[in-house]
Length: 162
Image (cartoon, rainbow, N blue to C red; front, side, top):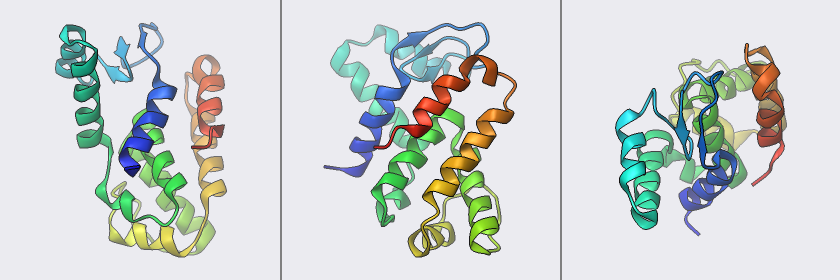
């Protein structure tokens, strides 16, 4: 199975359907697509039939959140988690957390620029810090001002293993 499709299916289970929570900075969301940050795609989803909707979602998530270098990770679980968590907290932020983990835990001197390039890929394939990364994301969640409301769901998502 294509790794992106596996990651996409895992993420879709986490994102669910439609929500409109007043405490969500993204406003109304449909299948994880924010009406605030992605209004055009959000609107397209409402006018599409089920098959077209899935095609729109796959194309959107592949273009916005998937990095083709994830296909080169030795650990496919890490690839799926990077994608899923990137959708949840932002692609740049999740990569910064990963890079910081390699600097702190692995003794590397990565630039924490939030870009998953060949140097970050190389670190991932040299040293497994998956659990340290998961704990660091958990700490990030805990520091968010809306943890009181969304924290339980975020932690459940974080604990789910692809």
